[in-house]
Image (cartoon, rainbow, N blue to C red):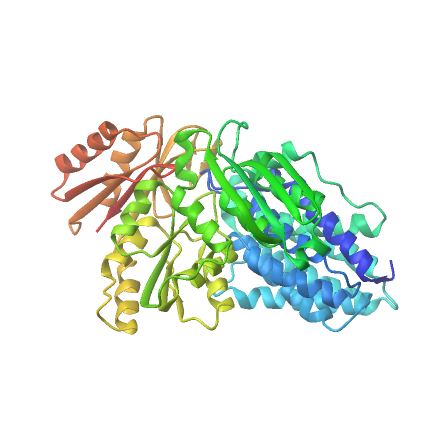
Length: 548
C-alpha cells in the first residue's frame, strides 16, 4: 500500500486490536516476577480496544480525525504502565498525522518517531530494555531507512517498523539483566510488536479476526473459570440521539467479551437489553452508559466468595456515575484510593477516604475510572493514592485530563503506604502541609507481601516452584516455601529490625484468623514490636505486612 486512507486505517486498527487480544495470554506469561500479576497483555489489549472501538465508529475517512478519536480513547482507557505508554505512543503518532486525510510513507515514518518521543516524555525515569526502547529503536531505524528509499510506501514503512521492533525486542534481555535471568523478553515490547504485526497483515489484505469469545475472556475476565461465579449483570438502556445513530450490537458484544461471557445484546428500536456474566460489572455499566440512559440496572453475585473483586458500593458508584445523579456536595478535600477486598476498603473508609476504586494487583483501573472518581468527589483539593506501582501512571494521566480540578497523585506503591498516607491526612490544615505529611508518610513504612508463585523459575539465585508461597520485601523475594505461615514468619524476620515499633498484619482471602494469629505470635515472640491484626479480605495476597 503506497498510502494509508481512513478505510485502510480502520482495517489496520481492527486487525492490530484482534491480534493483541488473541495473544494477550501469551504476553501476560512473559512475566519476570513469578507473582499473579502478569497482566501486561491484558492491560494493553483492554487499552487498545477502548481506543479502537471508538475509532471504528468515526464516520469520517480522514486519517487525522480517526487518529484523534483513537488517541482520546486510548488515553481514557489506559490501564497499567504498559497501557499508558501505549496510549502516549499513539498520541504522538496522531500529532504526526494531524490535519492529514491521507498519509504517505515518509509522513508515516516521521509520525512513528514522534510517537516514540512523546512516550519517552511521559515517563519520569525511562527504563531501557522495555517497550520504550523497542519503539524508539524501531522508529529511528525505520525513519533512517525511509529517508534512503525514494517514494517509500506505507507498507514498506510498517514492514520495516515490525522488523526493527522484533529485533529490538530480542535485544531487551541485554539491557535488563532480570529478563535474561528469567529467560523472557519484555512483555510490553512484545505487545507493541503484536500491534504492528496486525497492522501489516491488514495492509497485505488479511485483517486478523478475533478468536472465539470464550478463549479471549479466559484472560480478560480475570481468571473466570466458569459462568457460575462473578456477577450476573443486566441492564436496559434507552439510546441517546447519537447512540441511536452509532450503536452496533456486534461491537457491543465484542466489547463485553473482553470482561465476561454468557453475553446477550439485543436492540429494539431505541431500547437495548444487555446481559453478561462478569467479575467487573461496573465496567459493563460504563460500556452501556456511553450509548444512552439506563431504564433498568441490576447485578447479582453468583458466588459469594468472589465478593472481594467488586462490592455493592462499587456497583452503586458505577450506576450513579452512569446516570444524571448529582455530584457530592462540594467540600475542601477528598481522598481517592485503590483497593480490593472488603476489609481493606473498610480500613480506608475509616481513614476518611471518600472514593475507593475497586482494583489493585491483576485488576488495574483505567484512566477513565480515576476521571470518574475525580468528578464524583467534587472537592477543591483531591489526593489520589494508587497503592500499586503499575497504577500510578494511569492516575497521573487522569490528573492531567482533569486539569480544571486540583488533583495531586501521591505515588503510593502498596496498601501499607496508602494507609500511612491516609493516617497523616488532616482536614484542618492547608493543602501544602497535607501534601508534605502524606508524601513523607509513604517513605517511612516498609511493605511485605505473601503470595503464591505462578511458575517455576529462578529469581536472583532463589529457586521458586509454582504454587509455593513467596515472602516479598518491597521488590525482593526473601523466601519461597510450601507453607504460607512459614513464608510470613520468615518475611517478618527479614523486615523487623531494632528501629521497628509497629507491625500491621493484614490477612487476605483464603487465609484464616488462626493462621494470622500464628504469624502474630511469632512476631511477638521474636521481637518487641506491637502487632495489630486485620482481616483485609484481599485477593492475591495471603498476608500484607506493614512495618513502621
